[in-house]
Amino acid sequence: QADELDPNNPEIEASLAQANATAGNGIVLGNAVDNFKIQKQAAENAYNEAMEQAELKLAAGDYAGASNDVANAKAIIERNQQFFSVSEFEGRRDEATKRSITISNQQIAAAIAADEAARKKAEDDNAKAIALAKKQNAEEVRNLIMQARQLQKEMKYEDALLLLDRALFIEPTNFTAE
Image 1 (spheres, rainbow, N blue to C red):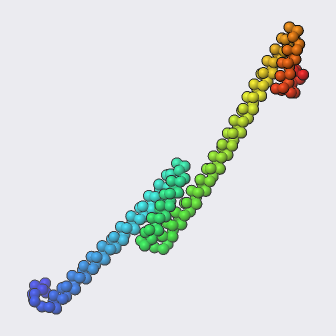
Image 2: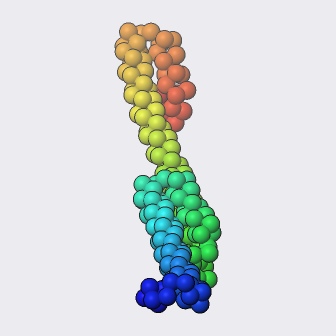
Image 3: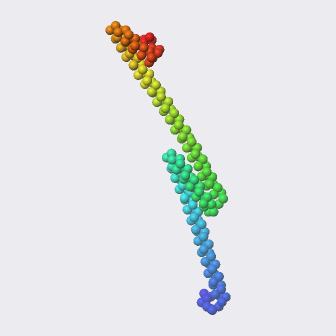
């Protein structure tokens, strides 16, 4: 309005220029604050997304993928440290570090459990194989003894003794074969 009254007044022009500059600085400062908030929110969102992906992968037993996602989350926080207060930064960094340790511990526990399950299965398979072999040996000894008795009835004593020797070789403590 002052400019309209006296457009050639240098003091009015200087004051007007200063007022415009100050208003411009306020807009620039407001934009900077808005950009800061947007970048901080983007960093928080990226961090949270990486941590959520880590949880999903951990639940699925993908320990390597979960570890990578936690490392990514930690890198996001470290790259964007300037947007967080010291306590916010340290809290998120510590959260990622603790999660990484938890993932490693769960991976070790899963590996131990898998090894134990494999050992147990091998023991069970071995016990079944031994039981089957004993059953087959007992059946073979029984058949050899029956054949030897038949040969005795036919008075083929030498052949019967050979069968009984085979039976004793298979089962040395068999009293019937002795």
